[in-house]
Length: 124
Image 1: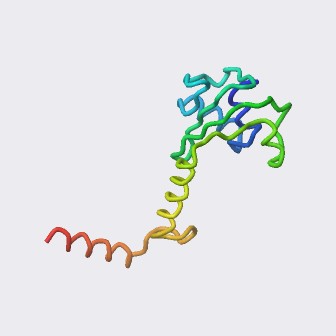
Image 2: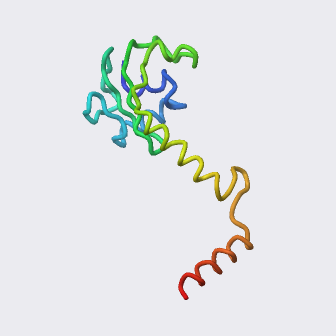
Image 3: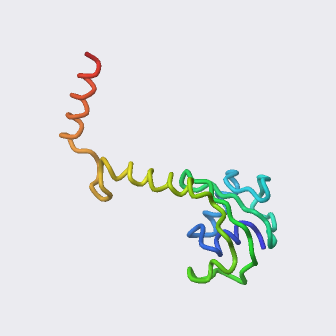
């Protein structure tokens, strides 16, 4: 099975075209080698994926016949991502949440003025 199709079928990417783009950009390695989207993956291969500033490490257990449900993903892959990497993901989410909550939109004039005042105080 192609590596881009495999990543799509185990739900690491929402669409196959996104998986293909990630592979073309060099964000996916199979057995520590940068690969093309057409590279075949087999059971026992180690796939490394860089997604959202996190380096995921996946061991291929079996090849799914097509895209599988979320409950069945663990039959086809084993997540070997170090726990420290997942902690980094949580810290990034907390850092983004600190200043502006999701859905609040762009900074207001008041926010910009407060930033300007803060920066002018630092320069003095």
